Image (cartoon, rainbow, N blue to C red; front, side):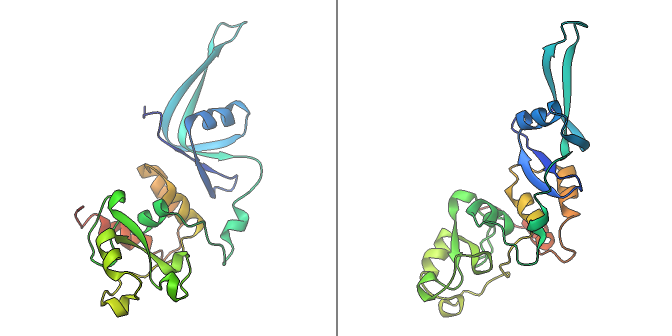
Amino acid sequence: MFSLDQQVLRTDASGMPLEWINYQEAARRYHLGQVLYSVGEPLYRVHGGFNSITGKRSVIEVNSILATEGEIRSTWKHFYKYSPPLNNHALFARDARICLYCGGQFFDRDLSRDHVTPISKGGKDKWTNVVTSCKRCNNHKAGRSPEEAGMPLLAVPFAPTHAEYIFLKGKKVLADQMKFLKAHFPRKSLLHKRLRKAHQVEFR
């Protein structure tokens, strides 16, 4: 069994990823009869109360991926123009914690959000205009464009799809959860290349 902070991936009835939930929420979904099916490896075995008639104790086994009934909230998230909310945790994960200026890989505490086109020059705070940057490169670039600073980008910033965003938000994504989410990535998703590159660079 896994530690209690391991997240469970929840999907809608069609199998589209919705969100990460903790084991308490997963157990609640089981208890309410909302789990249609589960896949992936077993994560937890949650023990409940004892049946007053049989004397048996209830047990709920929670798997790593749960499909639940109810609203299909993911439908609107797959429209062409959908863009997930921007936050540093997901941004750093999108870029595999690699500074897209110097190419070094860093811990989150040493990273920052850099606007390719600076806000002072009309740049927007959106996925396609922000990249992960180490603090040193960010300070050096300052309010200049990459061209003005002589700091060409190593990769193109992009807005993740909903499935990609769910993956990026995960704290510790298990192999089976990753495989499930990757199946919902676009065929030419840039994340595939960045994840491979992440294993080829060293943390600084």
